[in-house]
Amino acid sequence: EPVPAPEAGAPPLAPAPANRELVAEIVSAVEARLARDLEERVARQVSAQVDATVAGALESVRKEIAEAVAAAVTDALSRHPHR
Image (cartoon, rainbow, N blue to C red; front, side, top):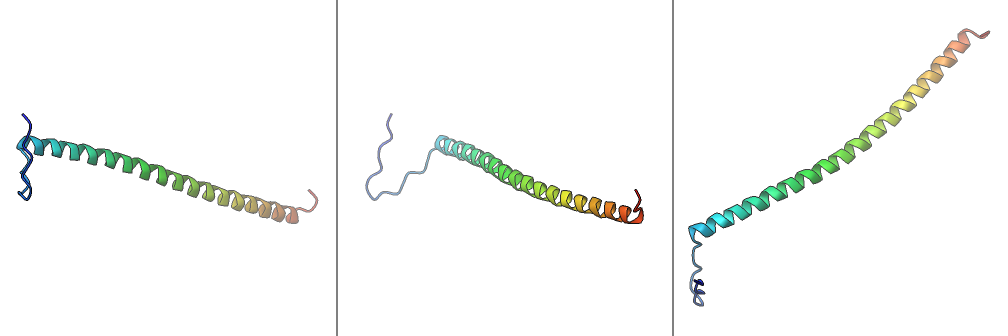
């Protein structure tokens, strides 16, 4: 049976218990979905930032290693000029 429309100016009808449960279920489902979506977005963004930071650190370490090797070779050759 259709629910009668409230009269103009009448206070809104309180939702029936079944309607409140349905609304609570819908709100809960939406909140859960939004939380998952947000978690996935944050994880992707953080992962990209971590990848970039690691790549930068590796490049820095490679340069430092190359400089250390060059310095060690130069020092060794200067101590042993006949080799």
